[in-house]
Length: 389
Image (cartoon, rainbow, N blue to C red):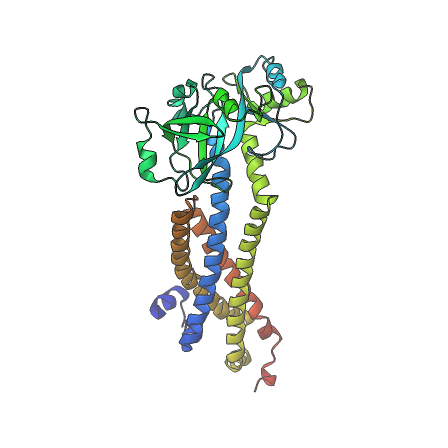
């Protein structure tokens, strides 16, 4: 390492020598930086998994525009929408088709665990399912037929693998019998263990208090080449109820994500966790470098008396900061990856280390350590060599 740094710096690696002079303190400093990295990695991993889980249901459907109630901040929240607005939207020449989307929660009582399934009801004949589900949706026309998320949390893999049209699985909910004929790829999120698809008629039989005249959302398809945002803006002026949220399907997904990250307590907490991790790293590195500057103040004073500029001292301290940042990142990355992998296995949440996360945390670590080093050298600017001997 000494030879490598000397080749890179073109001088004796004074910062490396000062850090490694006390190996226990050097190891403690690296552990502190690694801990800060782990904290940031875990918080970012949870935030990313929340984003993935939020966006996942939108991938189940093939729609261009979504009409929701004014208080519908997400796909699973908010009041109902009168079906009459679907009929009014179909009056637009660029709206090709529409359907009501129903959303509810079903509890499947299993011997070992009760599965909470976010359940969607949609007419399977109107073509609003995404391609991965559309090829299996014909079976939903049967009364009580359903498609199950095979990655539902708490669902044994062998049970999910056995669900096929030839070997359906039936269970009872609220006095109604549901029969699962096939599965699709979903995955447990923060609001439930998994997902289930039903036809709108089967959904209404399962939830007798609901009515076909008031779905949770209205999905629309528009003509090829039409701009969803333009059509949505036009529909907002056409529909009489101005309290409704009329937006493109992509915009609805982004608004949902923004709401989860900036308005919901979980998103805010995880965001603050990232900030706290960064502050912890800055404080740890500053404390290490500040102590190192104090311990070598006489040596620095000697260099200063010999005419060396502040830029020289700043280079030494920044060298130490970069060493701590780079070497502290490596164990932080490894431990963070292991923790996220373990959490993903235990919770089935989409927790994983991504290249973007690793790159952003590495750059952030280097910047934070550089900032700490710059702050730590302020004492040298004010120091008078004559007062240090």
